[in-house]
Length: 306
Image (cartoon, rainbow, N blue to C red; front, side, top):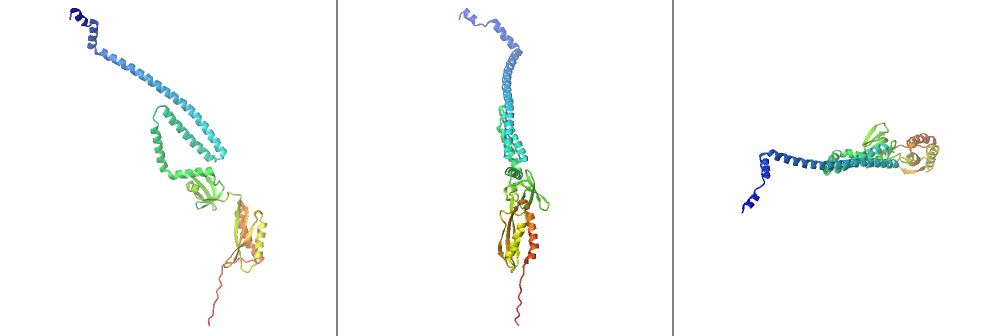
């Protein structure tokens, strides 16, 4: 190796001075690293803010459009309820329920737009719903029964019904219970769960009802006269309908009486008035025509064996 080649391998004095200066001044190295980190952090932060800002802007757009859609759907649902003639109390409750469900779906959608995992929220709400449903199973059954009663209307306020061992007039239909006022003015609260699934006899559902009686005369009395007297009493009562015609016939030959079955059609509100008045008229009229209302009796024959 000659002197020129050895001289080319020796570094320039300025480079050496720079390396030596950096070694002797570590703060310069630290300042350079901090500047690079700050530059990267600012770049990442800007990207994050841009992404987050775009998601927030999109979430706001979804919120505005979603609220508009929810209002439109609520209006459509309200019109459907009005066309079906749903009870006011049930309609207001269902509209609130539908609004809550739609808003819940909208919230879950917005959370998804923001990039937050929604599966955990859905699982949480599902678990809470199952727990609440198990705790309130009886109450929810009554609630469902109330909805079914208000929706299908097996009876209305003011109807005279027989259900769950109770006979009386419907006073109020609530979401969870139905209030019935009995004939002796007792207020009975019946849960809607059993009421909606049990047998209901609605005496006020139809415009007309048939009144049934069984009147008895003694053996030996004139049967044709008894039949004619009952027919005249029915014809004289204007509340008894002519169509269908009243029906009077021999029902049974009992041990102590001859029984006549009587059937007549009346308006539903006139049922009890006609029933009780007819009983009174028959009792007062039979004796005037020589007809006897029998009572149970026994003949005893005493035999003398002497």
